[in-house]
Length: 326
Ligand SMILES: [Zn+2]
Image (cartoon, rainbow, N blue to C red; front, side, top):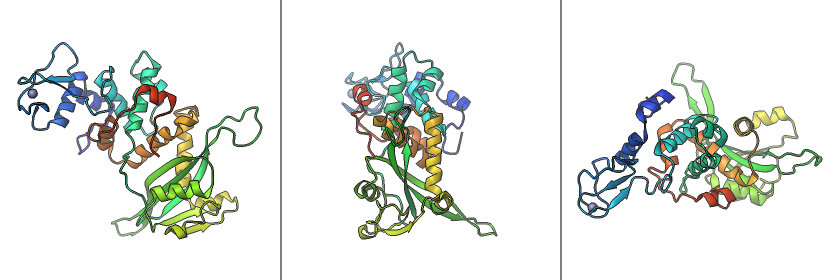
């Protein structure tokens, strides 16, 4: 258990959340830290609990109104046991590589693949804060694009079925307190977006939506970025001329991000991500990346325990109609 009271290992998680009742108790404590009060009549006092079924409903002893423990969370109206949701959120937020729906189905012995897919995809929907801040500011930002996915077998060369992903990452530095005073650089916050092309509109539009005005922007010499100074950014472009070593030196952080992203897509998901779902996977990746130091906050927000989001329906998720925010 770490200092914020969050389980740091699978056995610890199992001890904290051994069954559905423990998960229900946790939800209740989160919502009513000082004890249950009826949302309908305001009566304060122990509610009636149902011993025979999984206790996701509390009944007021005064007005007899039922209150659902999962209302407003991603688990709302779901028939999946709470413990399955909790496991899903835990595994998804704490495992660096994340997990595929197939792995999740197998590990939790779920009978249907669709159930596993639906749980993970709903958790993914809780991975973007609508009000999230712009990155950059005092930290320089590296921006670049990469190609993701796409089978070109039998279709000749080119970028068939490949998606263009543009990314921006903060370059942060800290001075060690020790005697050496070496400056160490590390990756700050990250943003990724699927774009239709490499046009200036698509690329600078992404920058405008995600990076704070006035930030130092580092890019290669691609023509999609010359508009940045007029937009109020300080632009450090580098004409790379296709030399990979120079690219590494000028944009080391975003290239490392892309390399790890590709490894994740290939390794965990066997490169089988449909383009219509790619943004959701990018959101998942960015979410875990940006909150790698805050596991408890991640756990709560994917379950929607604190951040209330409207959960999408299965039909919306499966058709790809659900707008995963970018
Ligand atoms: Zn009541």
